[in-house]
Image (cartoon, rainbow over all chains, first blue to last red):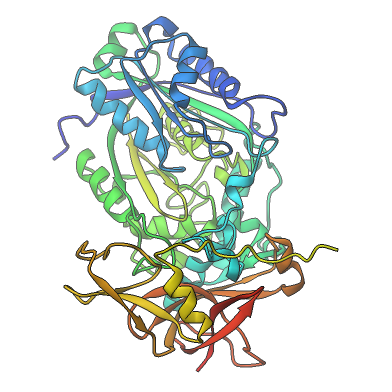
Length: 380
Length: 135
């Protein structure tokens, strides 16, 4: 049975900037553009916004950033703040906003993220990991952490490079049909095999784009959306989190993450099962993340992710279309809120790669090297 | 011309015994006195029972391979001339896991997870570091 909060809060509006490069623009400026568009999409006025939840920009950390942004927006929130779960922040913030609305702490919440690593600093993406001596071993960069997990998955379950390639091919195919996508060049499996090795076993085409941009969503109670005559409110059916937290070198199991508990919480809240899901937006910072998330969510057994993603099964027209706007591999490398926005478009019936008759969409967000995870279930 | 070196680890009161031990050719780890849990990297409390009552032990040097990656990209200038190089997660026979390099692999068979490894202490820009090779 669904939790009492399931379906009581809706996403009433969505907005985003163009994706790619925004030289000279601050994350505050990018956030404001996305929020302006999301408020217009919801048909609500700025003075009614009484909550602001914003993701810490990955490219540059700033103290009390939510207050800087509130000032620039000219609002005085009743509740909110800046959250740092890496890419999982977006769905985490949506869940906090939904609980705050339900608890009477606010009525109209904005959730936003902006990032500018393409034209700003990329330093945050290239640091060494661990306890300070990692540089001695040349243990640098985010791709290496995912490569370490992918290699273990290959060793444990026989997962192949071609199976990771099938994920890149699917996302690039969907992105090619999306006029807003940063990378609209489709990818064949042959091209994938020739793609440059970055940190083996991962190739260039296993890795997401580096992008400037911003996205925002507006949340309110379903009742308020009806009162305001919001055109296409999309109900939040369930959400969950799981925080693996430990460093890649220290976590006892490299190939199962807290994505599993995150999904279990979200599905239980919604009273749904994976078989009820018609379309999925799965955080694809690296192809292996998609494969493992599909396993941890229960779309297939642990170790069967490689078989599951092959033969067009996650492409439009397949059993479970994944990342119908192109995901981080093709639409924008921005960390995650665009996946929620595509989930909303699917539920409204407005996606460029619309899954016909889709009634339920699952969205995953994750951060770090699978350190954090959050799951969102959207419905009709 | 300035020589490019890997950033040396920052030493403090807590981790100095770890680095001093390596300089003597031994890899040391921490073990909790109340609960017996063994760990790396260095920390001030046991991550299992939270006690601050622990001591140093020397590792036997035996380990197994959890996973590995091969860098084809240099994220720091010093590694540009070493490409491709291998970074691994290894598990010591005593339990602690750590990041390290696999070295002196020669033209051996392809690596396999759970493969047996043994410790080699090597110099890296003046710091003695623990690396591993096939047992």
